Length: 121
Length: 112
Image 1 (cartoon, one colour):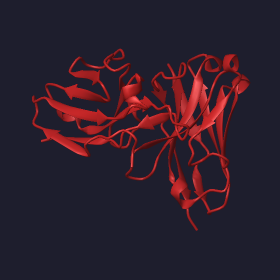
Image 2 (cartoon, helix red, strand yellow):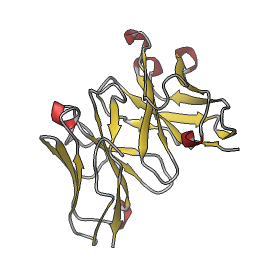
Image 3 (cartoon, chains in turn green, blue):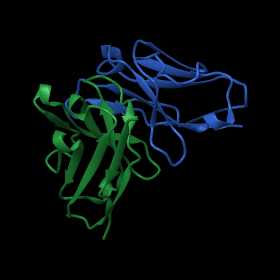
Image 4 (cartoon, chains in turn red, yellow):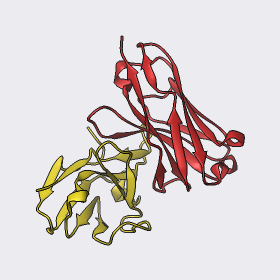
């Protein structure tokens, strides 16, 4: 059974940093692209960024709203995905989901349960 | 302001048919990118409902169907059931540099 479990969310002050993790199981993690998608309270889904697999050189892409502040990485030996968030703003407050996809342009076929990040003073 | 436009809400009585539209542009849906649909039940993560414009993953009832034409796509739900009450999101890709993955703003389906 495919499982994605996020962790690391919490309360952080504006300007602070936080690192989210996503533990994967039930599939060959190294074969897949992995994305982060967030959802502000009461709002819709917003794509955050992507890391491709080893075959595609682990290249990353980011939404303009987080580029230069957020960094996505992965450790295939630990079946884990990470999101390092720096210079956090109040508008980054959201539930952050990790999601799996096989390749570019494909759908997100599995999602984690999400972890809440609150940026507030 | 979402790149893909969906109606904020739709409603229907049990057993009825409803449709949810998703309107894009020439840089996303109109460029030939597939549209995918997700269902988000209250308090839960999104779940893939329709992929590749009109395909259902295993386990999704055939009451759910999708279509795409030009710069728009639609999700149809027939034989509405109370458990269909949820938020629905369309998703595609965009050739712009700001965000290659784009979502609709979401549509709240209320079963009357």
